[in-house]
Image: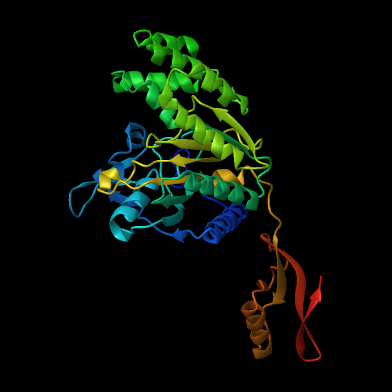
Length: 382
């Protein structure tokens, strides 16, 4: 095998795509800052017990593991950043009030999480700690939509659910982990026969409630239908009411509901959402409430947020125009070097053309050039 062949689902990012990714990254972080979010940079590598405590089997299977040559302890390369940010909130910041934190950095997956996906996503996320009210859920949703709007994502659709619905239906049923995984898979696949088989020994209310969830997807009428079908289960009133409240406060947004949706990370504890666009085969954004995520670090704070893969975002939006630039000759004269330095200090991109390479500028649109006229260096349009 050639030394330069990369592992499966790992790829170099070449200039045009890298430029687009970086522009999107900057735009996302700027939007988060507009909402008052502070940037954190967790390490890519952590002790395994810290990285995976409380996150569930799915994240464990997605995590690369290795032995630390200094301590001999097992370490992991992060597959998700949220547990790290929860640790930062719990131990390093230790604030009593609200903490708004954002991040953008690579994560590594042992397997691609969807067809044609990279195993090295560039994960951007924003999270609110310390507020249990729906105001925080709404802010996370609004920020996610504003991020996609800033990235020029066409026709976003918000699909909403609540992790408490399935948990409530299973609350009094002893279910082993393998069976629970199969139930979740049947719900996600809308597999009525498979779900019926897995729940045939369940109490009537739980079984009928789970089977009803399979058909509870669509527009706002779903919530009305759910209230009718699940009226015998009072513990579901709050999740349905919360979804209705959130949807009513997103004017102009396209919204749907899928009450059986459990995709994403296992730590979600309340309202959850995914945002889709016609240009992508899967959700661009996943988020929601995960109040229990900090409990394993000794500080069980309310938490809500979302994340997305900036690399996947590039594939869902139109290519961006090349940046304009000024073409300048290569030379050593003091006047030329001073003119170039002034232009760069003003924020202009100046590309010095090396001798014999006059037509080799690919990633910039040189619409002007620097020319000497009467002993002065001036800019002329091309």
